[in-house]
Image (cartoon, rainbow, N blue to C red; front, top):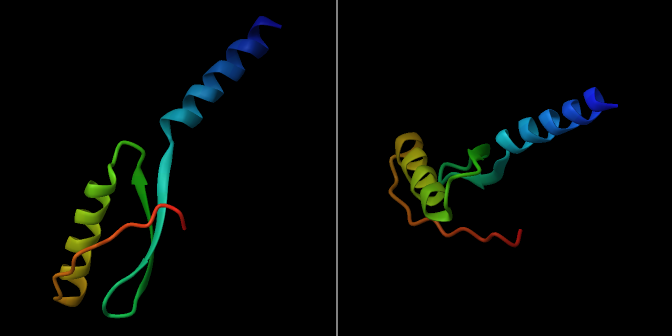
Length: 70
C-alpha cells in the first residue's frame, strides 16, 4: 500500500513539473502554429516570444494581444 501511495505522489509531481500552456496562433504570413510554453511564462513573455517568432518568419513586427478565454 505504501508503494502505491509513493508512486501516486511521484506521478503527481511529475505531471505538475511538466505543466505547460498550449497556444495556437497564426503568423502574418498565414502559417498556423501550435506552440507550447512553460507554465512559468507570463502572458507578456508569450506575447514577446510570438512577436519575435513572427518577425523572424515573416519580417513583420506586430503587437500581440493574447485572449486567454479562447
